[in-house]
Length: 257
Image (cartoon, rainbow, N blue to C red):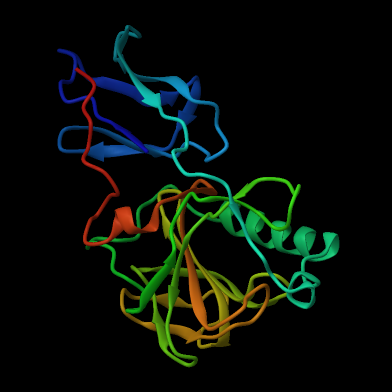
């Protein structure tokens, strides 16, 4: 997760400004007399250095540039072998994965650059953490390695699930693998996802406020017991949900000198 800010404006009026991660232009907005952007590095990314660049163009067309680098570390966790009954794995089909991928892609594409939240994020339920973010795993010996893209929180069936922050519901429905699924658009590229719900309490297009009930814990889809699988994504890329709790943003803001 990488933040960048340009604290000092050039001595002329600013005509344009943007932030790049490895050459990719990021959404950015004004923040504390600077420029703020949020990006996420995929779990499967190769370890190594990444480059950040902030560019300000003044009224005379002169480009002012500030650069920084950060290091992507290797995933420190061993690969888990999950033993799941064949009857549960049977819900994971090519058709189901494609259906869900299309729903997620449409939801992420609808997120506007404007930030919708003004207060820190909160836990969607209180329960027992059973599987953390980023754990590599195989569904059977010799299977492909995948990553756990969220946090699993076990709670009794029917426990209310609340929106982690203000936003707009982009997806609300039952899906083959993710089960009862809600996706909330928080703006600025940020979405929260809630899987395996027994019942959904919102509809697509609903505006929700931090703490509003959006559904109830269940074990629908690819699940072996009642729990919430909760994700926080930036531009569709998963991030550690627990890093957002009680914060406006998931990490301290790093400034480009």
